[in-house]
Image: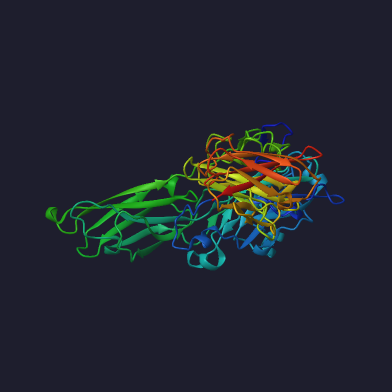
Length: 531
């Protein structure tokens, strides 16, 4: 199943299964001549089989086969089928497909990873031949060739010739693990046992069906781990017939045997955890029991019209499926920004894992950033105090996890517009009462005379990017933190060529925003603080 990216123009936007294709060249705005474009988001999920291989080998796509099946059951010709790893960008693969094929009802695609080479891919003619395809990578070759995987059937009946779809890959191999259960008086670990496996297949396994014709072989696996209550990997195998695992104590020779029935043994992508329960030495040295725990894969059924995330961001900053961070809404908000977690709803069956931001800073690190406020627990997207002088574009990436461990991402475009006014980085002013300078985009006033109740700031401190300065208003918070109430006693206004601050107590410890307005009515917030 798959989701297609879709943005509505309503204030609350329903984002469909749109994965974060950050490279626009992967998905053009319209077909090129008669060629459509599909971007497959290749999801490999967690390292669910918990193998001995490093995590990157569990996730790695070394090669990819893409097969387009026509309604008559034949594979479409003239479409590139074999791709090397370098063809993927952030696990996204762009495939050119004739528009007339994409728009034909009943057309579907299958993906196969880390399997057949180019000759094998090009040699397949029908869907049935594809469904009979078997992986032959040996378990010891996983580090170099990767774990064989395959997707389910993906419908490609799209109009318009442009689409983004998800390809959720399922590993063909399974694994056997062991865990010594910690209890009082237990002094042994996984390394104290030998695991004799009878009748597992390491020869081949089907990509698209749970079936086994191989009678299997006997193997002996060991672990060097001494850890208790930790799952350790023993080895890989393909779909098998009914098989047995014999757990043998190295110290006493005592053994326990368990059996994995056919209906489970011939299923792909399983994890079997042998839980070893040693008995205290007072009950007999080397005695133990064994139980088996099976990890059950949960197949994700994605509904076409079901949004992954509903965004309830303020309309001031969020319109037509895009975040616009500019100077609108600055007044009495203390900063331009949005709460990234509290203003969204995540669909049932999904869990929000992380929110990251890419591309929203210029060369001087000006633009927007994610800010975490420890006191309130709020995570916000806010403009930097050092303001960007040109528009900066980027993406918010929301990483979500399905119940079966498959990850996906929803992306949200972000535009950070330049302000009409900002502090002049080169500005300095010193009087008997105060010394002003700009530090990282913030005007800092160092109070020299703490009894002063009125201060004048030269307008040369303000750089006009847009129209000329017309009016200013001061909002201040005390103590210095964003969540404090606004103290209206601290006032500021434009008086000729100066901005005049007036207050009925010490300026020290106050910070806030100077809101300036130009002749066009655009409001800008510029941060200041007194120390």
